[in-house]
Every structure is written in structure tokens, then in C-alpha cells.
Length: 416
Image 1 (cartoon, rainbow, N blue to C red):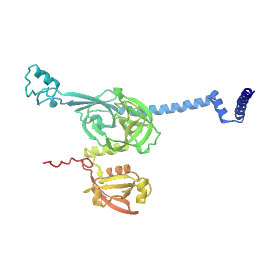
Image 2 (image 1 turned 180 degrees about the vertical axis):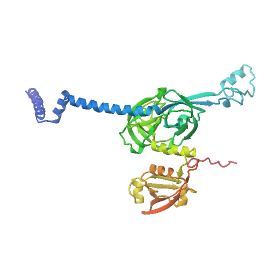
Image 3 (image 1 turned 90 degrees about the horizontal axis):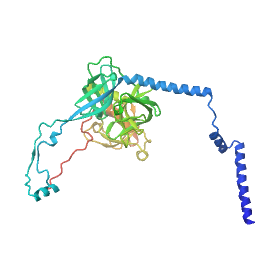
């Protein structure tokens, strides 16, 4: 009887649960609604289908128009670098088997190895290393923008246009600090030039297309969005990159990142990848930074950056409480280097820089960008918070020394 009672109780429990579930469904419960929605999707009306197709076609048209506006200005760069390998061999002297098992082998069988062997190879031909990248024409007179790493050290750069014409690049000027380069071709007529946009107007989620020559596939177009802004790459110290998920692969370097208006808003530079290929994270130099670099290279042949001579950091919660300032209200000075513009102006450790010239400062990247783009030799006002009070200092900017911030070798004291 006890077992039968248990079975009856279980049966009634299951029936009550089903009745409760049906009751919830009858009153519009979420669980039942979800089952119905999954099994019986509402059919799309003809009007909705037409509207959806129209939106998709409009977006497709925008992509096509942007690609057509920029593709003619995208070029292929083929580089040739001569490497002298004879220097590693020329003048080599010594027993090549010394310290190896082969030395004992020859001695065991009575071979008398010479104390020195002379390899003097004078006529060994240089090895040729070739590379491929992309670039974009930014001026009808033959000015081309690309990456420094595409052309750095090359003995010859051949520029191939979309129409098949080829020219040898001349007057190559580079800025390794932003990984940008400017080169010129001469004797070309009717050159198309891409329009440069405004990268400061970009927002995360904006559509973009990348154009270039990945894996030697000319004029390849890929699409994506702006995934992030202000990204930093360790080897390139003077650029804050745009991040995109538009496919970028080897060969895309130096090609343009373009918005849907057909304007260049970045120069494709690097990828984050464990395999060397596309994994959804690419980086481009913002075109507004490129514009400033272009002007510097054209005017000076190199980029001249102003500097302060300080080590700076962000105002985090701990520093804000310690120095009695608002969180992220500026940048804190961690160190002032001697014989620098900052030292001459009287900047001190723990000063919080809140304004430089007429621009507000909120992050270390802001200050670095403002300072380095300011005219060398100009005197600007700097507002700092020191000891809880605001002060204004005058700083005369100087050109950044080539060796500033780089480690210096200090000779060791003699053990004698």
C-alpha cells in the first residue's frame, strides 16, 4: 500500500505541474511564449522584405561607391633590397673544426690541421630580398603615402598603378616613430588621388573598408567596423592606432582604411595574430596624425617633434586622493629630467598638468600628442595643480633630441 501511495503521489505531482504550466501559458507566461515563438516564427511580410532588401542594397551601394572612389589611387609597392653576405665570410681565419668532434677525428687518423684557414671571398654576389606592400596616392603630382616598414632599407621601390603602369619611387622620406613614409613618382600623368578624411570624427561601430594587396592579390577590398580607438603598439611609440575587424593581411600594409564616404581615415599598419594571418584585429594609423607627419616630411624632410622632458602618468584613484585632485583631471608629473624645457620652466614632481596652451589635458596620450605637434621654439602657457592650487608656467618648447629617453651604456669600472 505504501508503494502504491507513493506512485499515486508522483502521478498527481506530474499532472499538477503540467496543469500549472498550461495555466501560465494561458495567461501569457514567458516560458510558454518562448516555446511558441521558437516553433512558430511570425512570417515576414512582403513590405518588410522589400524594406529590408532596400536597406541592404543601399548599404551595398555605399560600400561599392567607397571602393570605386578609392581603388584607383591604391598602388602596389614592390621593394628590392641588396644584402651583402660576403662580409660575414670575408677574412675568416682559424680552424673551422676547432672544439668539435671532427677535430679529434682528423687528428686520430694523422691529419695535420692547419692553425689557420683563410677565406677571402671578394666577388660573392649580393643576395636580393624582395617585399610587397601597398600605398595610396594622396596628390595628383605623384605623392604616395605608405608604411615605413614597407620601404625601410630598400634599395629600390617600384610603384605599380592600378592601370598597370610602373614607376621607380624617388625621394623617399620616412618617420619610423609613426611607421609612416612618403615617396614620390615622377613622369606619371592623370594620376588619381584619394581624398583624406577626418579620423577624429570616427566612432566605434562605424563601417570601414580596407583596400590593399594581401598575398599579392591586387586591389582587394574587405569590410568591417571601427573596433577601438587610441590603441598602443609597443614598437611604435608615437601613434595611437585605430582598431578594426576589417580583414588585414600581409601585403595590406600601407594601404588605406576608408569610410563609407570614400575618404581615407587611416593607413593599415599591423595585425594582432598568433598565426601571421587575419584574426579579426587590425590596426591603422589615424589619418589626422598622418596629415601632420606628411606636412613635416614635406617641409623638413623629417619629423621634428617638440618635447617637455618629463615622465608622466595618469591620475588614478590613488594619486587623485593623495594629491587632492579630481580623478582623471589631468596627468601627473612623475619625474622632471635635467636640462630640459620642463626643468627650465620650473615643473616639479607631483605637479598635475591640466592644460597645455589652449587645450585641456585629461590623459598622458593627450599631453604627448599636444606637445609633440606644437611648434618648436614657441612659448606656451601650462596650467598645473600644485599642492591643491592652480599655477601657470611658461614653457619654451625645444626639438626632441634623437637619443632622449633611450638607454645609455655606462662603462663599467675596471677590476684592476
